[in-house]
Length: 468
Image (cartoon, rainbow, N blue to C red; front, side, top):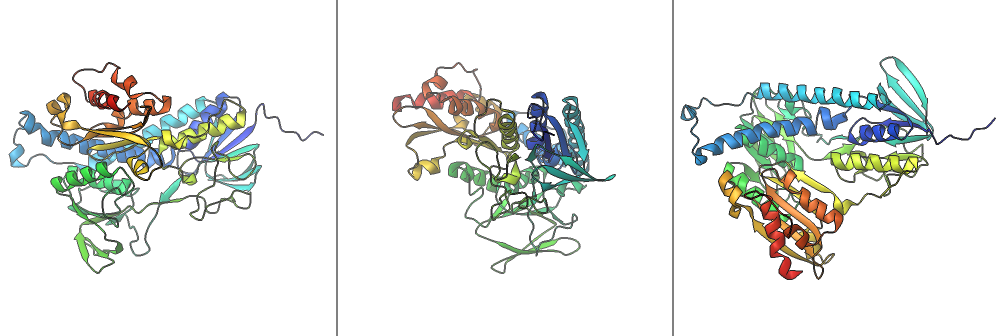
C-alpha cells in the first residue's frame, strides 16, 4: 500500500484566522488545496475583532472631531458650539465599532467559505508535523495535515504590578467596553499603539498623559516625524512624561495611580497599558514538532515563511517580523505559493510600507534616514514641509512633511516618509517607486492633480533632480 502524499491537492491546516491565515486559506483553496482553517475567536482574528478594525474606527471618530474643531478657522461656525453642546458619545462610538468588527468578521468568514475552505471555531495544537488536534465546543478531533500554516498572532503584554481589570486599567483590547469618555487617560508606552490611542482620546476630549521610557514618542520611527508629532501633542494638550518607566498601576476605585520607577506618581481616571505584545506560541506543541522559537517566543522563519520543521510555515505577529496586517497577509500568501509550487518571491522587508494612525498620520517605506546616518546606505534626502502645499493651505493643514530618500549617484528612490492627514494614502506612490526602483524623475514627471497633497510628492522628487 502506497503512503506517498498527493501534493496536487495537499491537506492544509491553518491555525489562526487573522490576515495571515484567512488570506492564505483563500489563495490555497484557489490553487487546489484542501484547506481547514482553525480559529478560536472568529474569522478575521484579533486584527478584525479587537485590534485593527476597532482601533482605526475609533481613530476615525477622533479624526472627525479634529475636522470639526478646525472648521472655525475655515469660516464654518457651529451653532451653540460656545455653549459646549457638542460632545462625544463614547458608548455609541464603541458600540458602532464593535458591530463593524463583527460584521467584518462575518463577511470574511463568508468569503473564506465561498472559496471552499472548511472553518472550525476552536483551538488547535500540533501533535506532530502531520497531525493537528482541534478542541471545539463539540469535543476534540484530529486532523491529518500534509502542511500546516501557523498564524496564531499575539496578545498584549501586561505588567504584574499593573494587572488589567477592564474597569480602570486596560489593555488595548479592553478599551471598547467603556461607555463614558475617560476624564484623564494615562497611557503607558510611547510606541505605535500608545501614540495612536493617546492621539485619539486627546481629540475625543480626554485629558491624556503619555508615559514614555525613552527620550521621545515613537522612538523607533523617523526622528523628524516623531519630533513633529510630539510638538503636535504638546500643542493639543497631551502631557508627555519622557524617560520615565511605569512601575505599578493601582485602581483606587474612582481612578488610578501610576507609580513611576523614580517614585513620582501620576493620578488619572483610567490607564491604558501598551507595552508590547507576546506571541501566542505557548502550549501549541511547536517545539515538540521541530518548530524552533526565539527567546521571545516568536517563530523562526525564512524568507518564504518556512519554519524549521518540514512543511510547517508561519505568518503574522507570531513570527515577530513586523506587526502589520499587510505583512501577515503577504507572509501567508508567500507560504502558500511556496507550498503549492506557484511563483514565489521572498518577503522583502525594505519594501514594506507602514502607517501610524495618529493625527497627523505618519507613513514610511524603505530605507530610513537613520540607516543613512549609520552608513548602511548613501542617499540624498529632501524634506518638503507640507503647510506650503496649496491644498494643505486650503485644508488648514499646519503640520506635516514629505521626505524622499534617493540613492546617491543614481537618483533611485529608496525610501520615503509622509506626515500628513491620510498619509496612509499618500505613501503609495513612494512605496511603488521603492518597489519598482523608480528614479526621482519618474515621480517628478508624472502628472499630479492641482491642487493636491500628492503634488508635494512630485515637488520633492523634482527638487532632488539636481542631485540625480
